[in-house]
Amino acid sequence: MRKILLSIAGYDPTSGAGVLLDLKAFEHLGFQGMAILTSLTSQNTRTVKEVHCLSPDFLQNQYQTLCYDISFSGIKVGMVGSQKNIQVIAAILSNNPKIPKVIDPVFKSSSGTWLFEKEAIPSYISKIRGKASLFTPNMEEASMISGIKMNTPEDMKEAAEQIYKLSYIPCLIKGGDLPNQKLDLLFDGKKYHFFKKEKIEKKVHGTGCFLSSSLLAYLVKGNPLEKACSLASQLTHKAIKAATQIGQGQHIIHFSI
Ligand code: PXL
Image 1 (cartoon, rainbow, N blue to C red):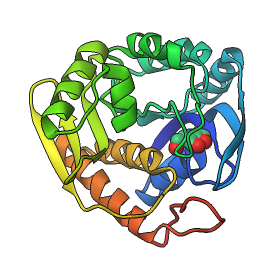
Image 2: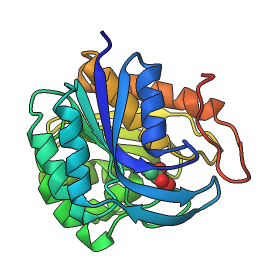
Image 3: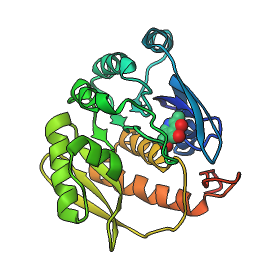
Image 4: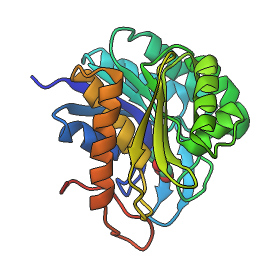
């Protein structure tokens, strides 16, 4: 029987991000994907028009109903939508201490719309403290959490260390667009590991969702953290190269990769 991975995230009707993309990544790597929703969005490949957050009670209800029947081998958290949902998500993470869990913070869409309350970021971090295997902010999110602007690999190290101190979760700062190079940085609480990346001049939606979902899948397959990051980073690179412009806005990841 295929192992089951759970995504707790938002709905993007283009399938370019959120639960629809997470499920595709899980299935691509040989898992059965399931999802419970924090929020619905009205969007196309150009812009996010509206966000509708689902209530914490309904989020809890979706989880309870599903977990009464199903056992999960891994959990990924994406768009939380509203600070009201964090308490429920933190309890779900605590209820599953033994399985890999990846948290991908989603504060803003790639087209620039806020998808979370900015002032609630410190409370978000404190509520998830120590509750996951990996935390995967992009450069902008890492800056918002740590208060550190990053221009060099040393700045990235400082930010990752600060985020680890606040969250007590190993941290992968992804999409590190520095002046002369592109790097991801993993800090596991002790060691730093940089992953060098080739720059691709393409605006692709949902790369963070895809990276964090594939990372969860690689962790559940039994890979150690550094290896899982490297494999997920390679697959995401391939997915970005293959992404196409289906509408008039950002490119979308699909699975002819
Ligand atoms: O890419 C971040 C993201 C994640 N999840 C959902 C989204 C977006 C961006 O628009 O809509 C549901």
